[in-house]
Image (cartoon, rainbow, N blue to C red):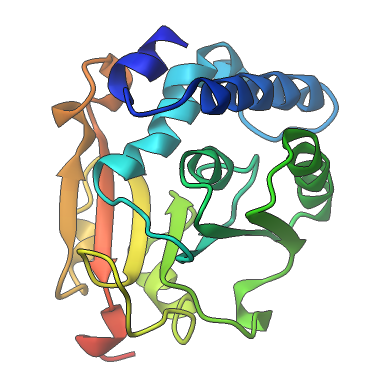
Length: 212
């Protein structure tokens, strides 16, 4: 976890220990159920932990912020971020019940009391969140549509509430209908080749500035 300490010097030893345990639990469960791609399981620190935590280079979640991890899969980026921001509240959702069952086991083993995981579709939620985070779950157009009515309008962060996506490649075509957004190139923070085309896409309060 030397790279983790290098890029996130603010992280405590206890948090590092939890992230190491998280990696071991993912690897254990991945033999039984495909939580993440098996082809890059050996690059977990870079491709999954650091990639997930890269969101903290853009935003410092505040106490009691409520964050929804949409289509969480193997608990990414929600679980690593919940370890880094223990005073924020994270909700992990996925439509695959088997993955959620495993994530609940992992959350218990990690002793995380600021995280819940549920097998539910976002359209069936009856709660709003400060931020909705995800890793390349869907096209941006569709993501904005399905998140409608699930983002709080008022927040206490330096940036407005909204959607924060981890994306890769050229986003030009899928952003043609989005009026306000910000792209943060991850290669400006990390030197590994994995991050060369990786980005954070931030869309502030999309329902204030586009028709749906």
